[in-house]
Amino acid sequence: MSSCNSVEVATDYDRQADFDTYKTYAFYKPGVDKAEISDLDKRRILRAIDASLNQMGFEKTKENPDLLVSFFTKTEKNVNIYQNSYGAGYGWGYGYGPYWGAGFRNNYPSVSTSTDGTLFIDLVDKNSMNLVWQGMGKGILSLEMDKKIERIQEMVQKIMEQYPPGKQMKK
Image (cartoon, rainbow, N blue to C red; front, side, top):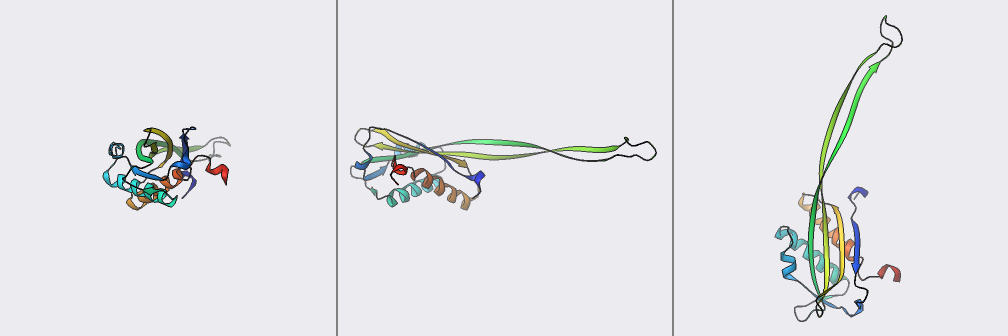
C-alpha cells in the first residue's frame, strides 16, 4: 500500500489498570450493535479483532470475561479540487516585432472524493465496567469488497499492535 493509504493510529489508556491480569474477553453486543455500519462490515471487524486477540494469547469466553470488547466507527467524506492549467503561446509575431504573441490558456478543474474511516476499539474492564484502553485507527476506505476487507484487517492489526500499553518500550 502506498503511503497516502497508510493508517494513522493513536491509543489512550487508564494508567491505573493492570493489563497483565486480563486474559479473557467477550464482545459487548450492545456496543457493537450501535456501530453505524453494515452487518457485513461489523462481522468483518469482529473477526479481525477476534484474530488479533487470539494471536496475543487471549481466550474468548462467555463465562465471566476479564474484558468486554466494543467498537464504533466514524466516517468523513473528503472532496479534493485540483486546478489544472494547460496553455501554449508564442513570441515573435509575423511582422509585428519581438513582443507580439498569441496564446490560449484553459483551466480544467478536477474533482476527486475519498472517505476517511475511523475505527475505535474499546476494551472495558468487566468488573468495574470502566474503559481501560482505546485504540483508534484512521485511513481512507475503499468501496471494492476485496480492498475493504483488506483495509479492515490492516486497521485492526495496526490498532491492536499498540496493546498492551508500553509494549513498544519493552522490546
